[in-house]
Length: 383
Ligand code: NAD
Image (cartoon, rainbow, N blue to C red):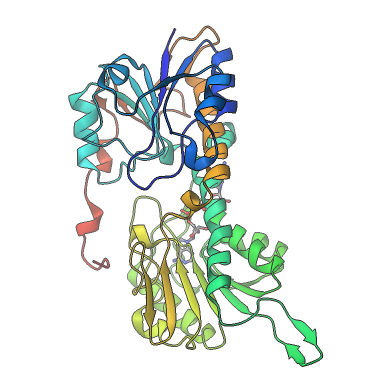
């Protein structure tokens, strides 16, 4: 019987990669889940609930338990200081593989197989496994709530005996999963919303949510690949910045979500452009860990720049741990249905179009060495 280890995540991570529900489902596939004590506490899952679902409990970071595990389900990337897994074990998680040489060395050194969930293809077969969507949805929702809580005014239009209050004006940059949820949340709170994206397909989705689409510059639109925007040229971004600058004077809140997979996020709000916002306005930059859409944002920091609050929000899904973990765990369990047979055997077929892009290592043989170059060092990217 294959052993599936669900560890207590490292550092400040509040989420967990398995829930009592998914432990129960995996047991039906002949898998034995071992859950580290306290792994689900921050997500509202007690050790007793895991036991009742059929899991064995273990003390965190027990080398013997890690050495016996056939599968490790994780939220965050593998860390050097974690106990060693045995050769041939499979790691499934958000492994942050881009430019992560340590990870690739670790997988190679311990002869591990690994599925990096960020690299799942956006095909219909993989929809139920799409952790980027389940977590980005939460980030988009929470970004608007954070900004609304920090804003110096109401979000909805209100007619009161003391006079009429105008609705807040929100700019959402990037209309992917996080951006669309940010639009929907801001609209539900009563705000007027404008949206910038470079994919033509985004227009209809934005308009169906009752927001206004800002036309991208005409020349050099980056195009898309696999549903994602391609990286824009410097000239296109400069023209886009000019266009956005014209929109900013009456904006109360900017939610930044624009990203290009594996590349630095497009820099759209330079310091000078951000200074066009009125004092009291709030910027939430969800792309901050990829360099940020706003020049002033810093990972995990709230920065007050001339009265404009810039929130560098890279960990918002972890602030809604119960639902973030429940959905993440279901995504992972759906993936395991592909790689574990009904009789409980591990079957990693690198030719399967679902696995090919995300199977970064097969028993230590690295399959995605293209991920190693460290783009963070490239010129023109915010330090
Ligand atoms: P993402 O996080 O990579 O990027 C967020 C958004 O930023 C995208 O809409 C992108 O077009 C936009 N962007 C990039 N450069 C920009 C710029 N210079 N200015 C403004 N916006 C810019 O994307 P995502 O949220 O993961 O989603 C990308 C697409 O994939 C969406 O259309 C989404 O609906 C689609 N999707 C498909 C599936 C599926 O088919 N299974 C699942 C999830 C998402």
